Image 1 (cartoon, rainbow, N blue to C red):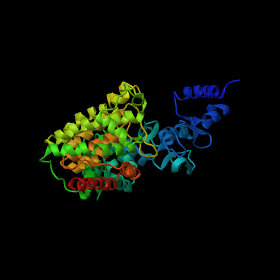
Image 2: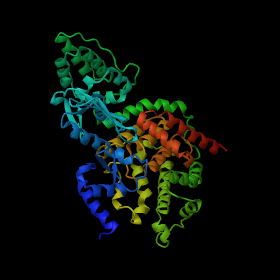
Image 3: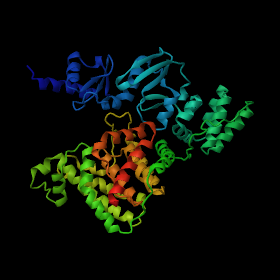
Image 4: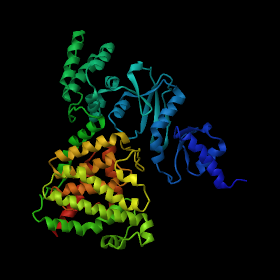
Length: 509
């Protein structure tokens, strides 16, 4: 008779073969015995009756990560099961996807002629609502991330006027990606959409696409339609239309709309220090507290004794097996090495170097130092030092999903462009920290790298090194989430400004 571990191994072998093509399954794809065994051991999780998603034994009860990671695939497979190929997302959610808005929505609205106008409750407060609608022309739809969505031009014709106000950044980014007036005009003329034509002409004019705006107005009037331009973005910020990826455009737009809110709450910059050696000595003095809080926020168990051993050079993986095998000790050593590299960058920055330009190259060295001890000990592969991630990542308990891996390099280039051009050190620090986490370019270490980046940017204004306390971890993560999900930078700006004020008082004491 097979032992329990052998039975589980047999079930896992079947799951492995299924996972070559999918991570969302119908019940009937596994036998009752295998299904029950895999659910009991945490390798599968039930979503709704008849549907399962991949999970892992490490996922705790209440952990939303497996669900959010499977959400788009579940929506696609569920809709295909019910509606075949006669379904698509709403025009509003199509716009959000084209604009690289990756937040998991509380509700996905599916249009289909087979729909029953019914809400399907799903885990963690999410749901699908199927809305009975006729299918549009085949040319109006495309596939994105396995989901059937409207093309950008078909979507902008259909979205409501209120959507322009609710999502001005996303809508302007998508409008900016439309190359010319041809497809928009064809749809406007086919449907006789004179009111929509006036709205879109004003919207294109608002983002600087005067050529498209004029073409819409002139052509519609030539077809004997009355067109009156009405700006749907009235009162909303304007996004400069540039020829780049939607994610890059979205990042620039968010930076542009968020920076004033940061400046409103931040204390004035002290200016570059005249006594640079004294400034760097204070950076050295704060290492111990910074290492404790930064590593503890990430879940490492560190102590003053461990930090002192690392700083004094008594950490020796060749002689001490504990140092070689301890994840916490290796991480503490990596933090020390990275801190020294960051301090070197800070020295150049307070000497007058452009902080954004310098960190564009230096951040790679910081990252290598952060994980070199783990690579040397064989805990992670050497390829981890190569830099940016090649896989999707999901943030535990958060509805925010970082960008697709193929978008990361472009996003990081955009981030450093913004840092180089930004004149205000406070904006560089706050938005640089948040935006690095927003892109989440690394498989691990994003939080530590974001706080290093923040302090390098703070130094460019003469602000002292500032610490995010582990006691504030929950609030810190919550305000980061608020910025990433709702686009509201105010709570995070307030939080970092408070950390900086504490550091200023300490430096003045």
